[in-house]
Amino acid sequence: MRQIGDKFDVLVILVFLLLVSTISKASVSKEGFKQCEHIVKQWASSSLDLEVKDDKHVLQNLLFFLHVPRTGGRTYFHCFLKKLYASSLECPRSYDKLRIDPRKPKCRLLVTHDDYSMMSKLPKDETSVVTILRNPIDRVFSAYEFSVEVAARFLVHPNLTSATRMSGRLRSKNTISTLDIWPWKYLVPWMREDLFARREARKQKGNSVVASTNPYDMEEMVMPLHEYINNPIARDIIHNGATFQVAGLTNNSYLTEAHDVRHCVLKYQSLGDYVLKVAKKRLDDMLYVGLTENHKESATMFANVVGTQAISQFTGSGSHGDDAANNNSEQRSSLLESDFDNTYHHNNSSYEKPSQISSVERGEVTKENMTVGKLMDVYESCISNLRKSQSERRVNSLKKISPANFTKEGRRQVSEALLQEITSLNSLDVELYKYAQMIFANQHKLMLQNKVVTNQQYHGFDELYSAFSWEAISIAVSVLFVLLFAILFVTAKRRTSKLKL
Image (cartoon, rainbow, N blue to C red; front, side, top):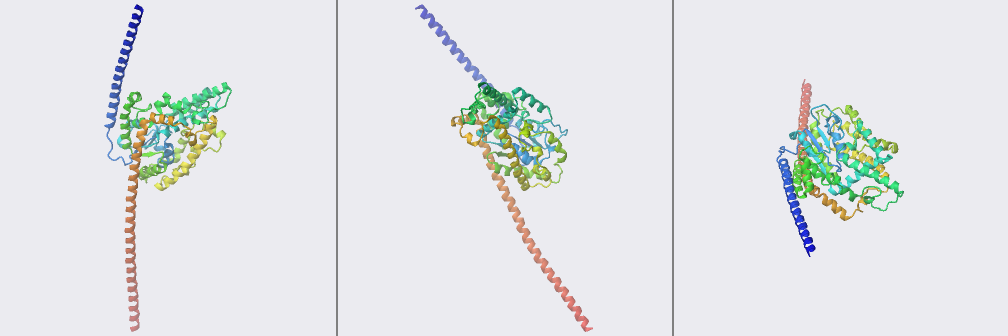
């Protein structure tokens, strides 16, 4: 009986301790939330209080292209902005010029994966910001596929050590590698290590049979998508990446408080509403917001909103710079995704590096006489070349992890449950994308209205000019007839005078 009493006492003590521990943890958690809420609110308040320039629709002296990864921004850079701005006008933080020191106080174009915190380094009143957003689900797929694609290029090496050494030698040269660029400098090495580990595991098993036909779930060949999206690295960089980038809170941020704010939002999801509110305001203040899915309309709008003003600024100013002199610096600096281009040249001689594209295709010779119409023509030609080279590079990369092959048809094999999980993990980006769609619709409507006004003015001038022309012709004909009559009259009078004599 006494033993039973002792056991009961021990049980009571354990329950009491468990209760105290639970209450203590709840108290600590509540305090932690309050502290985080204060940190996030303070940041959001200071961000929303920043002054905005009077007219956001006017292109300022400096254009900052905030390139959200996997939205098609690279196409805009090479097929639009490279046609409008000379290489000498690019800022040193542009992602193809990370190691170039222009030794000059001013620049006109900054194209980078840096987040909005970069604005703290720029003259706010003289800077216009543009960006492109993409459907968050598609962007996650694309980030996963690109991480695998670039990492697979390293599989030409016998082991990870050899691949790491080679990439180190490439980075020591005066070239810009994908491994230098955020976020790929984190994502690619992670995926590269995983690919080598899986290849080694296949060798040890001596079995190359792949059980799954779903390219997003071939664990023998590549990290499955469900594993990728739940990894802490993906949670920190990929999910809600557009919102954090537009808000200026990535792990690449220049803000000292960015780490604490991001940590709090990742820990307490309800605090994400403050970040979303700031990101929406950032979009409101931008000169242009494009959508990857509305490719044609976005390109046309970019040409009319940004291209028109850039052309107007540079017309007759000579500000395009000396393109011929800058070609050498561009050739010394490779473009994104160039880690193993030399390897590809040995295996695929048809692949054309961007530096080998003719000057006409690059648009450099057309800058002086550029118009919106010519800009769109050059863009269409340029994008065709880029897509071809990107497709060839992708095919060569994915051969190394065959039969894993990422296609639109392959995406249809991804389960609805996994798609829902991706949607849930990117709830902030989903809301921001909806907001961007609304901004895009308003921008498109405004562009069409401006076109109508311009056309009406043009037609009005044309009608006025036409009426004026006919009136002028009538007067001229009348004057001509009067002069002819006068000449005939004088001539006849002279003949009459001679006859009299």
